[in-house]
Image 1 (cartoon, rainbow, N blue to C red):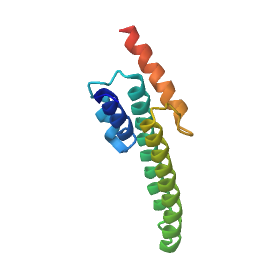
Image 2: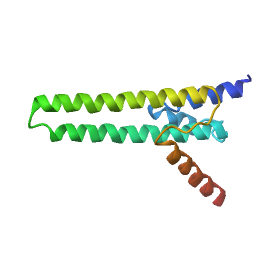
Image 3: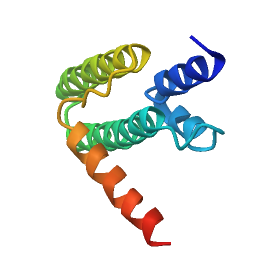
Length: 125
């Protein structure tokens, strides 16, 4: 494995760790198809789970009339979102390390669609 493949593998893997997808966006190898796939998928993953955590917070605020019910609902929703986020990160990082372009469940379609839109805009320039 040469150094460029190692860089692409590393950048693709960290693309799933929160806002670190931006590192791949500004990297020298940003035009590599594997890296582009994983950075778009990591970006959609970060944004979608940020939205889910915000929604979780708002739902918990709705139950502020009952502290016991609020604690139970908060624990259940936050746990479910966190476990799902962990599985998605694991699935994405493992496919990036193996140089596979496997779509993540639920969000992979949107990442591919976003990449197609961005490609068409780049070709239009």
